[in-house]
Image (tube, rainbow, N blue to C red; front, side, top):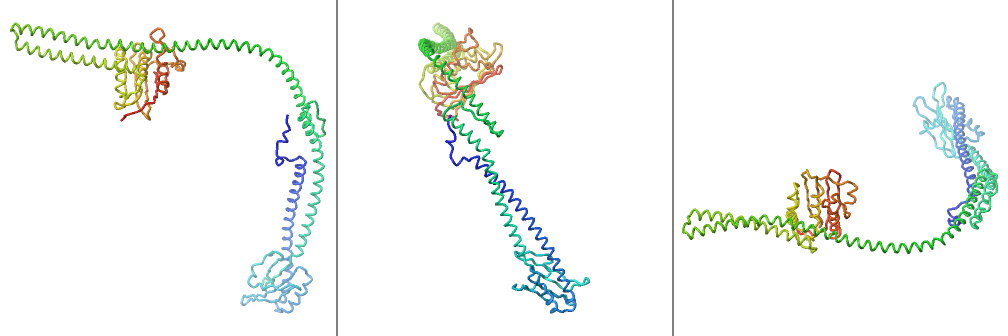
Length: 547
């Protein structure tokens, strides 16, 4: 075990002591600030409201006292009366304005200015503005109407000083700050006492944990604690140490047993290793023999395919040659008759004309059948050469495919199935015709043997196209299809559904090897039972010409 605290950076660590003290102080400070701010706000609002109501009442009283002097238009008496208001400390300036009922104009009537207080400009332009108290930074201004029996006599403007209220607010603020500081000191003392009660037991537990971790002494135990949470932590730590000790005892016993077993195991491993070497040598020999036999079987499959082709071509060539022999024999007989008639001087014009017509017809028969035989032999020769040739040459794909089908014509004619070819007649590629020949022959023969039931006329579709220097072959039939299990093993050697009926199980294995190894291409199969089989082949080639 290692001490993980040493791996952490000092900036990322903080002590419980600091957290507790900080938390108590922050909570206390926030609570006091909220309380003081709320109290100051409501006290400020209350003072303003009280000042507004008092100033309004004072102003109305002073204005009412000026009623008689306004009625008798005696400004000097009013000025003398206003000087008696010097006892009211917070009044700094008073203006009395008289209202002329005739002209509806207002004019200055009398004023009062407190000692050492400068006068203020007249308020004739704003008499209607300050009907309610107007507070500025250090003053309160108010203008009220002076009426007598619902008759407007004039206006009174009074400017009050707020210095007394400001002084009271400052004193209240100083008191709040003093209370705040005292409260924070008390909170600090309480927080320190609280953190000592928590952190001292925790510190002892931490030291115990470090000792057990560093010295790997799992026999120590934590004492009981006065706090429920810390006592639970101590008990959990003791339980963990008990399990560690039990685990170490068990591990020591297991290691002792393992060392004992290892001594016996080394001898057994040596014996088994020698036995495995002998077995591996035998398996390598058997695998080499298997590969040799497999390659031999694949070559035999190629030769068997070529032999079937030779037999079919021989049968096909016999027919046109036989017709040619028959036509030539008939022509010899007719020539012998004409020669006899000529020697006996009995040759008529009709006989000669008939002989010429029959001769022309027989010569045409001989020519057509000999040409047909020559074409068959030429196609067979090309297919046979391609089948055993691994060299690259340039050829027309459609013509190449027709030669392959012509070589398989005897096999195809013996079945009712139809082969449909879709290929661009101008598609010319440069590739290896031999492996491609083998691929097409084996796919066609595989379909003819395995795809269709005996009483069904099937269809085989061969589509060849080129794109991006790749020859795409889609070989499809509408036969019985294959199962999922067989589809997974269809390219494996010796896998066939016609065991004992002419199927060797090597045809599609040969196709797979030719596609992937001879060409470096890819082949996939898609099939469902009853839905036929589709082979998708992609072979890299050099495309020379395509429409």
